[in-house]
Length: 546
Image (cartoon, rainbow, N blue to C red):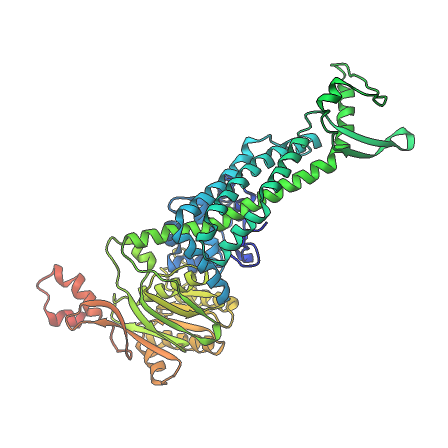
């Protein structure tokens, strides 16, 4: 039995870059394994004298502030945080797969109490492992069998409760994923099947001992050990009127005969070993079902936490419309930066973006006008869409991409091993080495660490190379030479947005279509910061210093 709530035809799997001991611990089913794996990694980093190299997603996480998003989804739960992180970074590229996951999430948002109930049942099944007999390496088959039987007894009780949820809720869910999941529970966990399983488990408890046979081999050593099902209990007539019984022989061991007990245990183990192995595999199979159920529901539970917070604070959300990569679609109404909203008590300003069939979007305009915020909101919406989530917007339609990459300005290198321009070029080189056609690159003030002429020329060549490789580029810049140069070419696949500024200098945080201007109105920022503290500064002085 499979869960298949994140994918239509397979279990959830990570991209190779995200495989690590922490996720291995998550798949183990041990509720305490994640913290232990994190402590081990931190200990290794402290012991190692070498600095840890940045991961392939570290820049993306930092630039889009994804930790803020995952923390909101987790609501304090470490497991939900790790699952949200890995699911969001393992993007889907098939619009049909995205739609499948969106429909499952829509059911979760409509029936949150059912999802919480299913998640708690999965946790109860995995937590129950700590209550049964522990098994260590080299354990005897009888101990393995006993522990596996105890586990299966626990799992059967929880499977009955899962079946009950399916009976009660199957007709209220509309998504393909949940309807198939509930149908499998009702079909494969029928009452007669569960009763048969319980009958076999009672027999495997071996309350009447072990019945096995063997043949004598060379040197009178036993071979071909076979574990037999114990005979049925005698009826009351057989107990009162015993008939003629076949001859039987028995022997007893002295209570202090340790060697005899070891030999008898070894003989018993040879017969029990195939049965113990089969029952242990059955217990592992059922456990893997609960592990995957918890993993996949954890993502949806995180989405529910985020959606509940946004809804409670009056922010719009929508399920985006994904389209194939080649269409270069992008239309957004009222899109906003979800991570910024999570930091603020008041609302944020939404923006409209119409970039259909555009491979280059150049964003210019007034400082502090919302350019970087809109850039981050577009990247965040793309990632959320391709993980099957809702997005922070009134409506959003976009083509899927092969990957999202960010190239944001950084602070000065504290180690002084290289200049800022060297660092920017190095990061861009890393992006180029990993990028594929059909990807998206978000650049925020890239190559602004040098003079405008040199920075514009470097950025111009980088952007042209990316566009030639069918990479979509969103570029926020204050370099007029760069933006004006592309605008003068009148490219039909380029869109130019400009942060709006009122005549009095007030920012509306709205982006409108418009050609680049040779100023970013830095004097507004200067006046706001300095002129208010020094009333002696004249307007002419402020303008000249700016």
